[in-house]
Image (cartoon, rainbow, N blue to C red; front, side, top):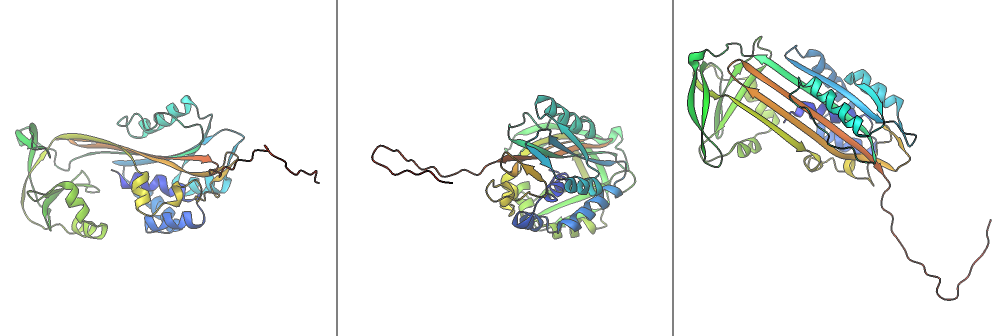
Length: 320
């Protein structure tokens, strides 16, 4: 998961929200939208060449939808978002996927399979990370070993061995940090105690505790073994974000994205938040990519149906 990529995409989206829809999003972000805009602009501006991000907005080029110029200007100012008006057919899906592939160095080739008929906008973030270790592992530091999966299955793996000086320890886990070249970024690993899972470890932490842990590692010699690995994920985050309190944003009846634009097809709301990641860790360093697409659609709220059958005497009138 790349929380930063998700935040870039949802931050752009929140600039189109109003009322309780915006309030719920701000509560989930734990920042008001003006502060979030400034913070994310600062983050993007402070990234080194090892980590890059790009944002784009894709608009359905139809008479039935009109994007707000103020909204687009805000996203351009704070997110440096490119704006593309497209027919929203298969060629648009290909163009969005090409944008994602380009800005993740080809690690993520596709984020959208098909575009629904009532889609009006996509807000897309793509990120890449490519960094060598501060101390690249020598050939003699890479040795065969056994990795045991969560299901208890043993697999052969190549482990990279080193001594580190940033020890991490907390309730139910221990770990270490190792820096990338230039010391702007680091790799942190947390190993849960025997009988516990990474999911249980993650659920036991909160943001403040994790930040404090990573900011103050113990200056202790650590004998480490890190497996070479590749991993990726494909997620749809709607349920997660609704559980964080963003319910109106996904509700066609209650959502308020009037600052984003107007659609003749009905009320605008978030249909899906698509998220793709990939990471590769080896003796040279780490290469990773992440992409997030917020899919905005429009539809009328369902109306209640009544039946009237004129199968007996009835009154009628002609009115002005």
